[in-house]
Length: 97
Image (cartoon, rainbow, N blue to C red; front, side, top):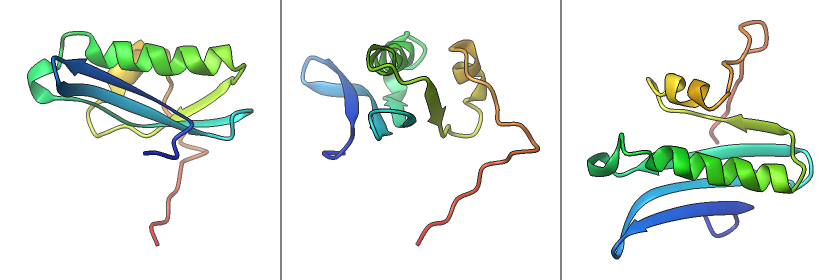
């Protein structure tokens, strides 16, 4: 996480309750990952605050291409923020070494 291009942390008192980060070249490619909200604080707008802060940073830096991975069942959350699912003709792929 220390080598992330940008990250957002939200605390309640001394407890971390929301987090998200960006991996980026700072020019063109951006990947939002590790967006999470503590279960006791979900559905209170914290995830949207995290995402809005991450997207604001991209906008401020002129980055237009933003990608992300999301957990199963969370697609609607990201669609509400303007994200689209990848085209089935251009599916994503991954390799874990």
